[in-house]
Length: 135
Image (cartoon, rainbow, N blue to C red):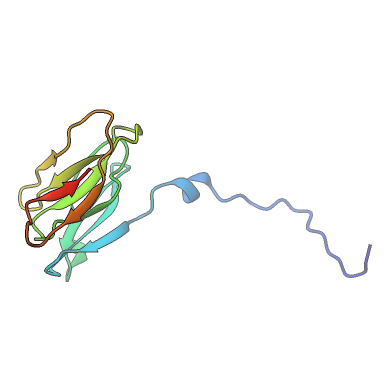
């Protein structure tokens, strides 16, 4: 054995599994088209949900959704900034439906109630703000 080689004999501590695989504090911030609001995902009762706040005062944040099960996938603003669109599956079946959440009322609707189908968002157009092209 060469001189000066040091072997560590102590066992290294492992990173706790929840630190690696648990929910982050917040992710995926999205600024509204008018720049006045910001939406992101953060936990509500241990499940990632969509939160909303004025862009100039994030401490006023409130959860927009209170969904159980698996968290939403992608989320983003409609082109006119009136709604937040997001994908969600049914507890891990990976058949994602497109949902819309209305920040003004808190209503959440499934726009594509089709079993065993995954929806992909193709296009949002500023010229047709109430229309979504999906397959």
